[in-house]
Length: 173
Image 1 (cartoon, helix red, strand yellow):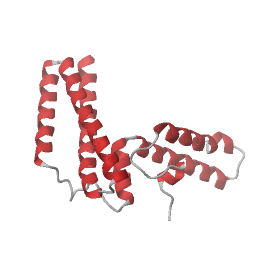
Image 2 (cartoon, helix red, strand yellow; image 1 turned 60 degrees about the horizontal axis):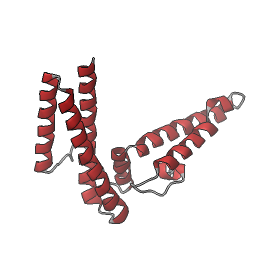
Image 3 (spheres, rainbow, N blue to C red; image 1 turned 120 degrees about the vertical axis):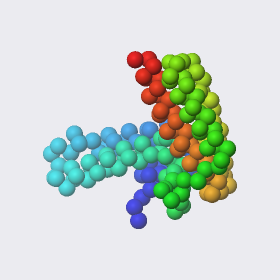
């Protein structure tokens, strides 16, 4: 059995984690496994340090972002949050998605940076609400079915935020 990302960093598996502790443990592992420390080591040791640095980086990137952390926690329970065969979303959330996308397209077409900022703030509030829900659903209730729905929403919100940031870049340039 391979160790989980949480075990790697010595953190209790939970959605609500202390990001400062995560970063501190990540930096410690990165420092201990840095290639410069293994310049004169045997090739097996060099390889092992490189693998540890890579694993720590992958684990850190997964755990530092709420959507990927929730997705990973669900995977530890044997649940795939999003797959080709499982992308169901509530109709009201899909409608909300369409409204956000339309608002983004309108703002992009008119180069209305204020409208884009307002949209980004609205979406970030929704993400904040989902993060609170996930603390309750995963850490307190172990309600993985509802947590899967919230995680899907958060993954979609991350995609919309990435698209919004691209539009902001396009408008500013």
